Length: 224
Image (cartoon, rainbow, N blue to C red; front, side, top):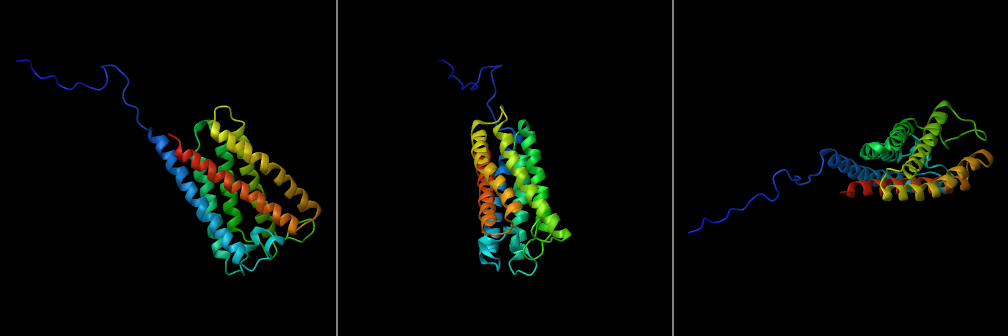
């Protein structure tokens, strides 16, 4: 009577081993997922502080929600700190080939943290139309450079040949929207000053930056 055949290995000796997710890739996806959560929580907290707070609405800066006298200032700062954490997590989630973008996001994270930690005075005055304190200049400068770092990170990803096609498309689309807005905000601040025009443009620019960061982090988290 013939001996029953035993099940052999699924691969031939010396053949390729089954592919497993690299620990680094798993860690990057986890960091990207955490970034998405921080963006959602941070954006929600800042939005509540801006909408429900005693600020001037669209005629003022978003940062005015963080003025110390406002009852919603703690919510604003928590939201800003969450967004700073999101930028750092997103920087860590990017692959090694995107070091320039990761460095820009890390710098944006640090500057966002400074922006949330240093509170501006009422109205968040900035030159050349208003007299600003040292804290106003530190807060305003950190906020401006933080947003600029994020916009440059969009460009860096869009212009990196080795980046995933989906990430490059997201970066190119966001940069195409953010660059004109950033230029318009800067020009309006120098020629018009604080008002409805700057307030609306600033909010649109921040919205583009948040949507890009969330979409990029989601794309990284879903990558296989």
